[in-house]
Image (cartoon, rainbow over all chains, first blue to last red; front, side):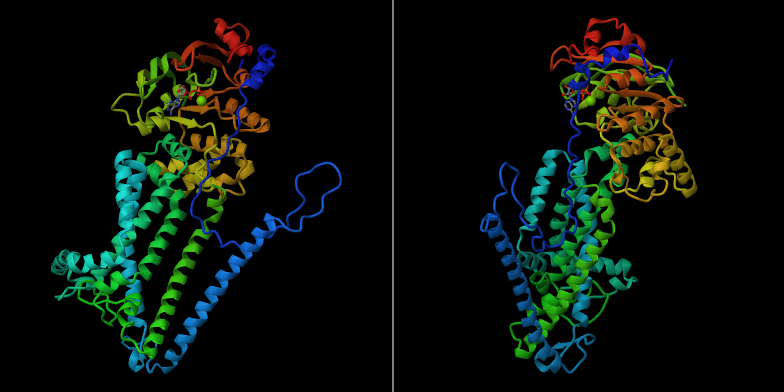
Length: 366
Length: 258
Ligand SMILES: Nc1ncnc2c1ncn2[C@@H]1O[C@H](COP(=O)(O)OP(=O)(O)O)[C@@H](O)[C@H]1O
Ligand SMILES: [Mg+2]
């Protein structure tokens, strides 16, 4: 009994009807379209070869065709983008360098901005830019991921659709509207909250301020958090929803609870996409201009005090200062813009590096 | 280790659609039982009812009684995650966790159970991989992604992952249907080996495979599409394939229908 593979039945079961009628296609593995860092396409690298086979002599290579036209078009488009970028860079640097030369204080360490008089430094602005963006993300990311998971794995379909729609709607609100709302409406509850924080948590340096509260790092960061929430939420929801069902079932079949399934199968699978979403949100937060110009106190100090009136950012300072800037002042603002660009670039490259490090595990999964 | 599974009057639904009706069968410990039958007759549905994976789908439910060593699997007081740990499952298409290394895949179930100690995990991983006849092929690259293995290796990895948590019963839903003949043989060999320790229930479309690996065979069928699947005949594999008691079974295994 048992291990003997040859059975009298084999001859009968080997009939062709049995073996062929149940052949199954292997089926394509569900594609996992996650947001990995795809490099910009460079020029096409293949030579169009001869077409599909056929009888007779090989035909001559065609001298003109859609293939070549398209190739020319894409090369031209690629070149144009490059030319535009270089032109912008040259323009910015050409404007910034004379202002930086005329600067009487150290551009990187000074905490003042009297650009028209030739005294300006980026320190306070860069600090405020990074601080507001980081706080905005600290607030927005957990909330966004929570909502995204709720939408992709917990909410009944009707609720998920409605809520998803509302969140996408939030993304469509212009930033100037957020700025106005923050400055006129949101400021009051935030001030009350600031007073409360100071009363009970005043021993933490972040909340050590007797007031006035008004336009502060906290107000700006919270408005920013609301603004980046939709991007992070909808991108994360997409990647969470793309988790292969087979992997979730594998976790469940191992005895995982719903939350354990999410931790085992969904979150790791969505990780590169979530990193990309957070970086997009960070990019938006760093570059956000008008909403911060309207909700920050436009002061020039470096302080971790979040609730006291004050705060500034590079982009907000450009918006506030451009109107009355002289030629020198404009050069100074452009120099600050270059710093902002450098910060964004570093952030993006870091994100790429994070995604790249786990590439081995995400590419084979696709 | 191995436990006995018994189904009494099991009926399963997808919403209002009745997929299987009144299934009665008992599976003895340390045997291999094959479920055969035409596509859509409810073999997978029945298999997934046994470890309560059926109810994961929205609107899906099971009536009747399923027991493991006389304990009711569907008792409201029973922890469903404990049921699934006791009754492991291997799926049709290999589904290692794509973000995890080979090692992490094997110990995923143990980690879910709160095992953290490195030495215990390493030991369990080696034991499971050896049982799954995969250790020699992967021992030098345990840190590499599980999804980078060949299809047959991936399926054995999934088997290792399933048995790493030391279940009593192992369910396999067409585990070889996505694999080449060599990998299929490797998995059939594995089943002979695992039978010493586990109760195994396997769905297969391959008659020779059923004949080769199983002790008992259950033949499921449907009258027409839309009708619920039923258990037509359940007997010793040798009997089913040499001298089936029901005409329908004979028609099916000789390829005259299905
Ligand atoms: N997720 C599902 N939702 C609704 N009906 C399903 C689902 N899965 C299977 N069915 C139906 O249940 C019946 C049995 O399916 P299944 O158990 O997969 O059959 P088998 O595994 O024997 O091929 C079929 O009619 C199938 O269409
Ligand atoms: Mg099936």
